[in-house]
Image 1 (spheres, rainbow, N blue to C red):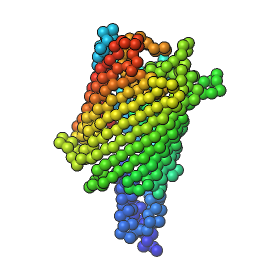
Image 2 (cartoon, helix red, strand yellow):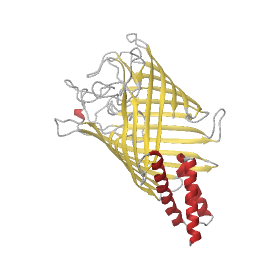
Image 3 (cartoon, rainbow, N blue to C red):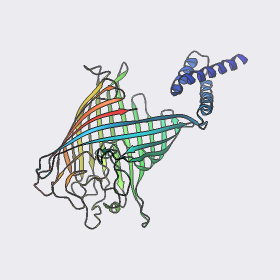
Length: 448
């Protein structure tokens, strides 16, 4: 008995010593040591579980004594990115002036991991002010202008997350606050910079080594009105099935993804141009305060199939070839109520010596979805403004066109990208006017 207790104490001391040498890799290193001892028969599965719990609590106490943080804080990670962008607009309509601008986006955040599967996160982001509402909800970009004037920084994330179930292939977590978007969709549904405010519930169940089912549900607050009983919310639910097939050494030959989701906005008529930031255009609106003419309750279906090649010249690692698409239909609008895109991507940038090239065609009709959620980079030229919208280059719905993109990552921390949009309005304003635009973006993105 004494020998067994001494063994456990020695193991615990070794685990803590390894964590002191490399605290950021504590979880991985301690688990590897304990698993090895189980394999050799030195520890039972129950003893391994108890030892992990002891190691976690002991590490937390040591970490707290060193950093001054509470003993339930297991890890604090700082991360973010900085992107520089040169952008040029070319119009086929001579009434519009071609222009060039230079922009940046900065994001800096901290993620705090605590014992008992609890997490909290904060993130700051650059953005440009949007009337009296704060920063632009669908863009963190800031334009170089104003003779070097000091720029704005806004709260981009502030959330708490709890994962009460994480065992046996089943994971269940809940998040409250201003969060990363829990729905897995493209920028046809939500701009990548959109960080909603509300609550989300996410679950996943691993059926076996090859198939996983996922569920995402959320309610977002869009507008709080002190003078009305009915505030404006968006609700959504999504089911997903991810599969992988034909295992090779270190990878699967084929991967698939299939998703179906529904979204709904209550009291959509309250979302006038003055009620929330008026960034995008495209929806059908009434006169006066420009309320939305229709409700927005779309169904979205997406699918992707990825084939992996063992290698490719000038590419580090397994090379993916991905075919993907997405379809959206809003039955609450009588017409102009669908959106879809299809595309192909070769490779995937983001890690050292990797690259990607891709193409998409996107068609997003005026009332397929709420204009203030969708990609703020996908727009065309309005010679005359719609009801509630100004003339000029405007992003939002009622746009279709081609997207070409190429990226290269010389290092894990740095990615260069070139994107070109070639777009037109589906229904020009006025009818018959030239709405075609070319938009070129050249980016350099540093992540840490």
